[in-house]
Image 1 (tube, rainbow, N blue to C red):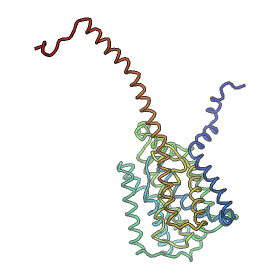
Image 2 (image 1 turned 120 degrees about the vertical axis):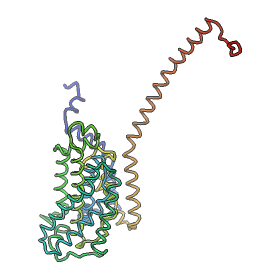
Image 3 (image 1 turned 135 degrees about the vertical axis):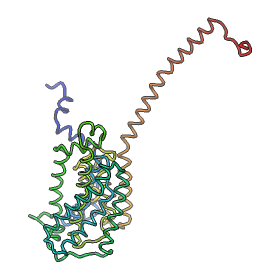
Image 4 (image 1 turned 30 degrees about the vertical axis):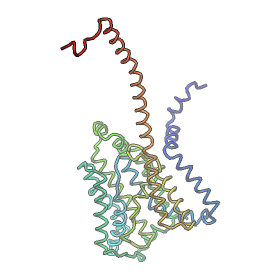
Length: 371
């Protein structure tokens, strides 16, 4: 009989990983199941196959963006320009196709261009220039969104004559929706990248302590540049899928996708401060928001109120993310206060001894006597 069960658990990586996962996003997973059951019982259309497929397909755009944000947030940053990159990718795809480039090459060119754009516009200033990621990505978001409107003059371009684009957004393979199939592939790829590669471990190390990561030999600047490039690449993929779903490239898409995707990432247990997170949690967070928005739509709730709910979820997710830190600080203060209280009797005793010694030596002189 094993007398040390704790040692067995710690020696089993699978059990330890499961424990950590439950701790990170177990609550959101329970809430997702409860919400799904509630909507299934109250909304007749919700649990139908068509609605579930539509829910999953519409959630893929947010999920692709959220995957990119997961990498960046784990590294200790954030990218506020993903919505602009999404819109720019759709517009760029339309322009390249209109120029006569074959559709497969156009899709590859947009993906590679998005990666290069994110690395140069966001990654280089943040990773190599050590500028504030908030300021840089906020500025690039405005810059790229303005460029989209300048190029398109605010007009939507329709892509109905390009079957490949429509297939990416609405096609099926073996009865499975193409966007959902792409989501499965990138989920496996992203999870493998984070968990089983040195690059993924470097992202976690940088998010935990960038200076320690640098001293351990990690090329922090290069990793950050690559991370922002990958984040933009995921946003580019989302832009292509969105263009396929809408059968059009619009300069107005993706305006709020950064906030919704960030809420999904934080709900999934990725720490806003960096160093903790994962793909599975992001998937759970995205599904929770997708199910919630779908349910509100079936209930007839206005899209404006859906944005209010999403904003409230984001605030709640950030607050929950901060709770462990606040709790740790409070415990540290309480320990410090208890230590100080234990030291007080020692000082009081010393003061008492000093008073007694003074009384033995005789009364102290008054100010008048010292004169």
